[in-house]
Image (cartoon, rainbow, N blue to C red; front, side, top):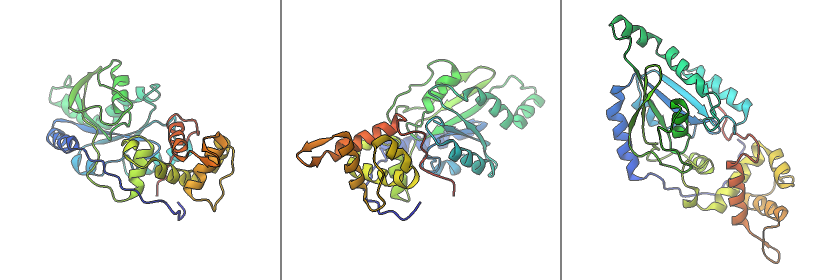
Amino acid sequence: MADINFEKMNIQWFPGHMTKAQRMIEDSIKLVDAVCEILDARIPNSSRNPDIDRLAAGKPRLIILNRVDLADPEITAQWKKHFESQGIKILETDAKTGKGVNGFVPALRELLSDKIAEYAAKGQASRPLRVMILGIPNVGKSTFINKVAKRKAAVAGDKPGVTRGKQWISIDRGLDLLDTPGILWPKFDSQEVGEMLAITNAIKADVLDKETLGANFMLRLREMYPDALTQRYKFVPDSDMNGYELLEEAAKKRGFLVSRGEYDIERMANTLLGEYHDGKLGRISLEKPE
């Protein structure tokens, strides 16, 4: 991304229950044959918990790129190639509609073919495979599990941190899933990661300054998807405008007037984030593989 003058933000977002959840995962990892990590296809880098590489060391891995319906398909293809080049198996899904979910069990059986053969050789062919499901909050993990299980096996909700405890969920054809709480990490290396998580609702955006978040989001959109801004908000984003000026221009086009000559920037920021969540800006990814 080009050198853009982003406004600085202070983001605090590591609730105490996530420390407990991380310990729970460390204690349970020895019980499973493989680890499945669910990422947001729009922000695969920012939605990857860096601790999971350490927690799941030595276990076969499957990465699910979820919400592909909201992501830029060309960039998703780049991410798929990026992960596969590292020897990681990839499955693309849209858990909300169930698209791609039927590929989950076959993908796991292929990933664990050696383990299945090992069990069969020991006379344990009927032993179920055990797979831990990991993901940051609000990445669609519970919705995905419910689609795979074909029943309401996990509590799903459009807010961060719904799943608080671990639970085993039996799936047809000898597969047990260990659902875990969504965990974030104690700190992040850049403001960018925090903003990505707030923009996609992985952390509560209402604990941040919405105007600054919206202004910085406007700058990202101008850099990566200027046509989306033009089509949705009916103006061509000027390269000399800062993020607040871009928000104000959009507010003018929407008629968000507070008083004579003054526009409601906060309302426009909320509108921008809400319309992105709803897919009204189009299929937009915010990160590309390096």
